[in-house]
Length: 518
Image 1 (spheres, one colour):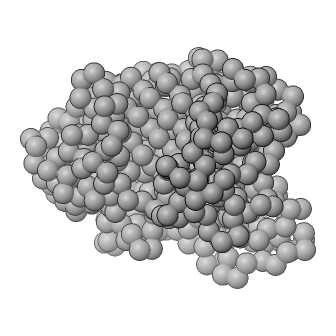
Image 2: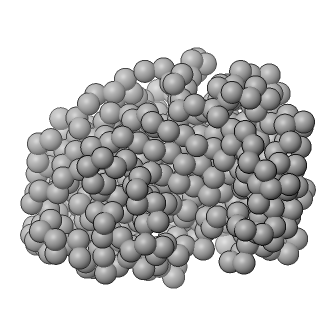
């Protein structure tokens, strides 16, 4: 399998911790079964709360410090980004220890707090303090209450509510129907496992996940999803029958070059394995944590139109069938719970559309947009933007479950990006505030102007997973941070604009004049 070939050095500490994670998640160590990690979620706060002292912990929930940083001086951003990446690594390391100490946890109700969460807080306090120092040194003001973000919580492994798993989608009843369709997902398999406190040994053929997800409750038959029921405020399609109605499609392939790595140039520039999961790249072919804007502009592109050197990237989808991929013993891959066969999309459609209320303006070179939230399982739905479906059923969109598609139908991932820009910045401290989603009427919020909306549609030919005795067999899942348990709500998509000025002007003219171009 091809990889981004720029050679970089992995710190020994990273290898050591990753090895521990591998033992816990898929190696030969002591591991425990699929915890029902869809623990009760307080949707209003976006936090998964621990429900019982000493309960078996499925994962770790830490405040997302990066999302609280609204005003970071330019001179501090690189240093802050590296500290934020260190916070992510600290959580990953703590989760590895959580997964590797199940026996100790069963014998000591205070083990998680004393041996995992306490040391994690100490590390986070020091890292968060350095973030504040970076901001102050660059002439900024340390955000108030930053220190209060150091404490993390354990998320209890417990039986989910029958209607949980579709929050806000209008699909809750469908999830219940699925549980009664003979699949024994919530009532039989889940109840039995809940009574055993989630401590049954992992059955064979679990693809090496060993409790890291996904679980049966993370899947739903697409036929059981109500049409047009998705109602997340994020990811609304901006195009319509008024305003700027044209489209521009850029053909960039499906990553036939195998261009992939576990970096994230937007949120963790200059940091090896900053994503802790694998991304597929199309478009620009010089993609890693160290690529400068000048290097992006000089690089090759997989797009048919060679003037489009934009980078488009997303977490890979894997079939957890026990396949040992080339990254099975690497950080970001199997050593951090991302296991199984990497699936290449059979189709990757990248289309730019207009705005229902107005013309669009050109995107600036280097504009960075992240849509969705890789930490949505613990962060909540505020930035979630997930749409899962099946070919032939695309009026049925799922946000918090993976679809089980009927024979002859393929899995579809769709991301409609933010398409309102503040008119000034190509990025922001939290990588979100410089762009916004359209409002319900299709217009942009005050102070923002409409830009072409990127709509990314990925299609995968993947066998439908089976639910047997409350367990999912050969599931598929997106790569993610290990503590996010491969939940479908964590799907996300990234884009950096490096179209030439002439091409971007063509895109704008095409969309504003109502043409369909490519």
